[in-house]
Amino acid sequence: MVLMKKTLEKLRVLINEGTEYRSGLKLVEFFNNLGFKDTYSYGGGFPSRWVYTDERLTSLNGKPELDQCIRSLFSPINFVGRIEELDKLISDFNMYLSFDGWNVIRNGKEITFKKTDQIDALKETKDAKEISEDEFLNHEFSDLPIAKIGLDGSLQPVIELRIEEIRKCMQAKAPLATVFLCGSTLEGLLLGVALQHPRQFNQSTATPKEKDGKPKAFQDWTLSNMIDVAADLEILKEDVKKFSHSLRDFRNYIHPYEQMTSRFNPDDQTAKISFQVLKAAIFQLATIQ
Image (tube, rainbow, N blue to C red; front, side):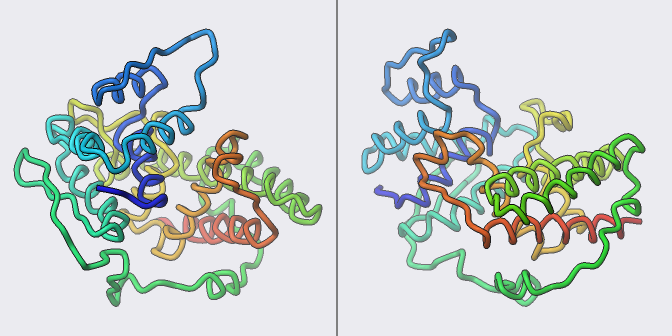
């Protein structure tokens, strides 16, 4: 099959960290199982993980090995004890893959493909109705109730200082710095809340798990994991979940090579969205009982 750029980008994220975190060495092993003969150098000279995966997926696009790549990625044997997580990952990927005319199907332990003319991402339900970017940005927030979140006493002043730094970056027209500060601050807030409510976060259907089925330690969760679990627990609402993932994508460009290859150039609008996501998340986190 031949996949569009957006689908390949989603596949890259799933390979690099979405299904499990793969180091540079693990990525080389993954793609060598698909016919490559790469070596990993610990002394430098290896490109960023994202650049490497992008290059390999581009090389496989349109070849039978791409099908093998997807089957290997979603192989149920790698998800023993966490099949629900696998099915959710497949469902999320199908939202992109359906634009290419395909769906991934799991039938027991088998992963196959089916032709489709339905675009999963365009299906809309009453409960998950999309909110527009303008509607989201037009929502006004007063003073941010950070204290009501109940963070660890030493963490709260750090968050407050970061908020002030973000405001300064906004005033200085520094969108890239704004994006990075907003993303890292959101991650810190969600980690702080997870540490307050470990049982709920570890028992969510979206909780990332090790191969033995046990929940991963919080320090091994990605920002994407934090967002999905907080949304599954209804701590974050659907609108914040949607735009939080956009912020997560923006923050991934902290690596210059990722920014260069993706031609990502944030502007004032990007900065506004990022800060609005953070403010909305703070208000929603402050209502946790």
